[in-house]
Length: 342
Image (cartoon, rainbow, N blue to C red; front, side, top):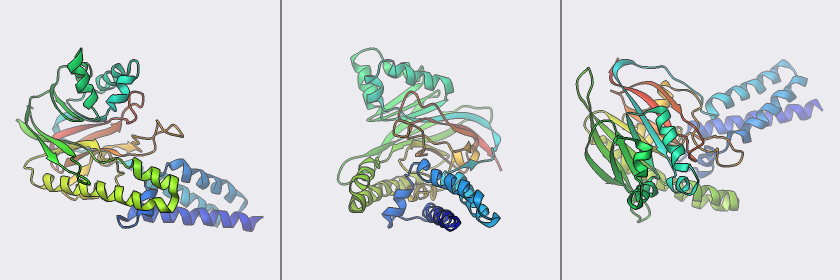
């Protein structure tokens, strides 16, 4: 019996180490490892907990192995962040939100729920993705965009809405096409007035291609579906590369917010962060910050795929994920400092 328990604990520990390696590496050429980054954490947390219980009938050494596996799972694999707030001045609250407007408009009270979520956090600058139906509905009746964003200045293009307490300047669209289809992002400039002087802030919002089709192919077809998953993954990486080229040519501080459809450990995020950006939640947030998954089985958020990235000259005081009621994505909110003290 104890031999079987030791085998189970060892097997779980090996599995955790494999997942740790997958999270630590940049497996753009290894689709199976990249796929593990999208696993719901209960799938690997549950066997680790079982191994911890099983280890109670074993020696202290095996208990240590089980506890080490649990520690790696709760921290590295689940993406625990324990950031440190920056110091400085010129505080600005930024919020990114994939609102899934087509679902909100179909649901009674859906727009009001979105408005309540935005009103709860009172962002100075708000960027939204999957918002095209919201803007279209405003043309046929009451201005539902204003219902959500209030009196902020607004720029709308395609699925994107940028809203700001301060006027928006020079908004432009950049191209990140995939597989011959047009796809873009929005870049606006906001002159923020503050006690330390005016700061021209570059605000970028983007929504990279969804992993849904690739994940469904892998789930339905198993190993034979990995080719479609890899194509999906490389398309997202190609978009990130095109966006990174644009970011490198921007002069001045940058805040990028959007649904990047990739966790922070992915090569997609690494491509963007290699331009000199850092993740606001990892920098100053605490906890897991999961933003997506609560609309799926098992009904809880298990992925952090919505992000706020900031340039090094921008400080971060705090960052957190918002509520799960109004959309399939929780918003990400960050309190930023325009004048970071280093």
